[in-house]
Image (cartoon, rainbow, N blue to C red; front, side):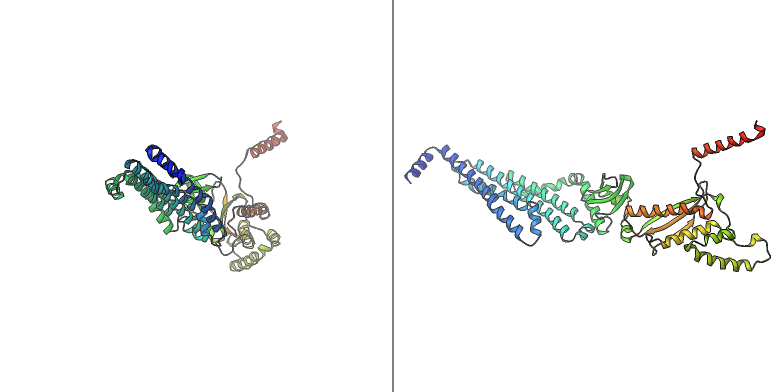
Length: 422
């Protein structure tokens, strides 16, 4: 005790040494408080969170909410202890306390921001399907903007030692400037509300927006932007308000229906369209898919022609190879396991033109998966193209260089065989 008293007498005899010693002791105390919080309290809290059966506290821990709050402990120690440092000017005490208080406000704002982010994680983990259809990320981003604006106001008010109400009252004159600065934020906020209330876009939707070069899946819906991962794995960022101002296509309806449309035409050479004779009809009757059609048509034509016996053959009805092919294609699609029979199914003629007579296949596959859809579509047209000769038809194709060369070669061979050419 004598040593302690003598040391204290020496310190009080030298004010600057007394002040320095107490200040160092205060800093050491703040460091110890930080170490105890980080190494002891935080570890205990982490083990308690890991041992608990609930999941929401895991999100708080993962986002660092507790760790950010722990950083405020040494600032609180300094804020409370600096008035106890002897011989410090009041101005220095006030500055240190203001800086410590501002740091506490900043730390609290960061912790609240992490808490808002953890709310997003909890919401997505609790109901992923609802989180996809009703995302709250935009609202949380607005809350973070308001939070940090208030935090900046409080920090400035604490540093200058003025009431925050005075600073807030001055913002009235800055309304026009704030409207200009936060124009995109305001537009995006209104657009986010409209998008979510009308259920226009969800995460996972396939959308097309040619103006922005977007064609792919929505991977993120935020306050200011909507991110689309295109099929070539590039990322297109679209302003949120553009989804309200401009037009875009959402393929969600196709995905939810469970069927994807096939709409493709098979061009037929019009010069191969003709009537079928009896021998050809007999030959086509071996197709099981055609038998109901041929039987029905045979009775229908027989009834029609019986009423016009003795008239010119031009008045009689006969089967055409093109009509029979259309009936076969329709029966083939109806029997195909990969085609939906409860959705529209058509095999129709389009307007003939220079590129032949288009026979359009219009139907829906039983899957929306891209690979399976393309396989089904390709298999159907592979089969129809390969079976065209059975009906005496030929697909239209513009002459290629090989066709022109073969025609020239054939013409040259004919001329060489002609006696007059010699």
